Image 1 (cartoon, one colour):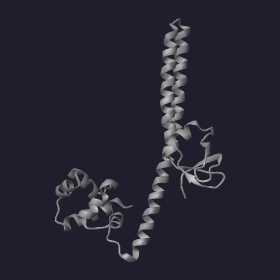
Image 2 (cartoon, rainbow, N blue to C red; image 1 turned 180 degrees about the horizontal axis):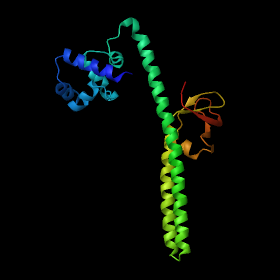
Image 3 (spheres, rainbow, N blue to C red; image 1 turned 45 degrees about the vertical axis):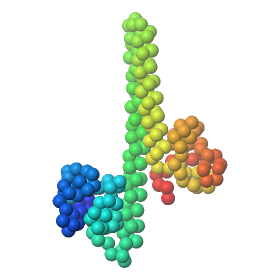
Image 4 (cartoon, rainbow, N blue to C red; image 1 turned 90 degrees about the horizontal axis):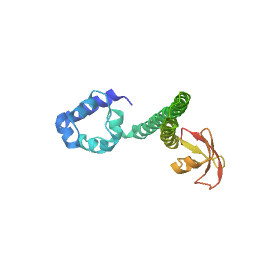
Length: 206
């Protein structure tokens, strides 16, 4: 989506309706600074207010996302293009999240080892054992928290593919947490066919 083009379109339609940035912002319950960011192409309207914005500007959501009034002949084509664009954006975001999961897990593991190493050094220097166990506890706590966060990323990013029927779905957090796994491949029950299998992670639901 061309944010600059959409921004110019919003500004044009706002002026056609005789609204200032402040008036449009007040009608939407936001700041005029947010409207200014839209119109300069720095950001896009949030999905939660998009319908109301279109109602005020007397345009369709399809018009808004295209940055121009879409004729009926091009309506279906434009809608399909936007759906494809949203799918691509979702896949890109999920790919970035899964990369972040790897980095987070690695950093967390290194921190745990660092705490153990520091505690061991203190033990050799004759420090009380409680210091070692304190450092170990800190390391284990952050490892647990980061591990749960990484699992949450894996659960929500992309989907799992049933090896039996090919159904693609987003599993529950509990199922992902307690399932046997090898990397991102987990032994899960498919909600479509009801069979358990080793299911791989995929970015697309199509």
